[in-house]
Image (cartoon, rainbow, N blue to C red; front, side):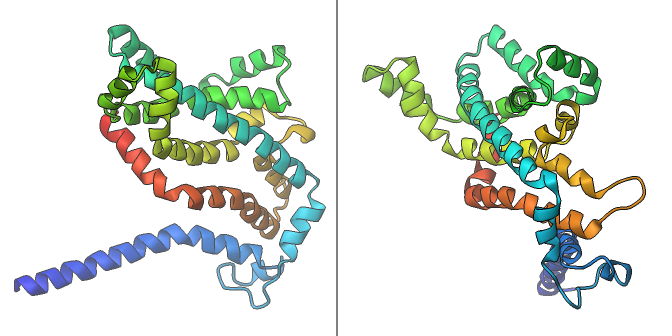
Amino acid sequence: MGTTKKRHLLSVIQKVLITCVMLVVISPFYISIVYALKNKNDLTINRLAWPTHPTLMNFQRVITENDQFLTGYKNSILTTVPVVVLLMLITSMAAYVLARYTTRVYKWIYLIFISGMLIPIQCIMLPFYINFFKLNLTNSNLGFVIARTGLQIPISILVVTGFVKAIPLDLEESARIDGCNRFKMFWKVVFPLMKPVNATQLVLNTLFVWNDYTTAIILLRKPFARTLILAQMAYFNEYTSDLNLAFAFFILATLPILIVYFSMQKYVVGGIMMGAVKG
């Protein structure tokens, strides 16, 4: 077989594989849209077929009939935004210190931080709940913000520290010569250069906090405190499940995440790669 034929065959195989992967990736979105546009009777005929009479009634029913939908949206926004902002400020400053000071003490502090990723939340669920209950922080947005911020710090420290190590020290030396102290140097020189990794943090942390189920189900037991992810459970019970309403709910809940991601996508890949190379 000639070289040209081999290249053509490899090109065809590559395109087929890419197409297969693309179909696997987009299939959940297709299923979600199909289910959300069908009424309950259509679901029993052919689940994967495009609906013969698409309807937006499921979206209307989710908004008007689910008492916890708007409450969940409000609570999700009031918890996600503070967590993302706190993580951006805390981990940016902590990562700067851990990246610039390389003594054994700081290396151990860094290892302690990132070791938090190795501890499954299932191992600490009981003391986790007891401590927050004693502090009267269950069923409150404040308690959830504190919990999610603490749980999200390890992965954020890992990504941001690696990125800060890639920032040239010469820039800080120039700022020091111009009379900047360490505080001004960070906020005026280093922090603006962290825009790609902070955008990555914003997207990933928004995704993790918005979709958090485990922490929410532990701390937010009462209806008035539940986030959006818990409000969807109204469509599943012991005997029945309203899949068409559940998928309509899912699409409505996903819209803010999609907006954030597509607004920041050009920074996400670059921020992750730069953080991974130096981390």
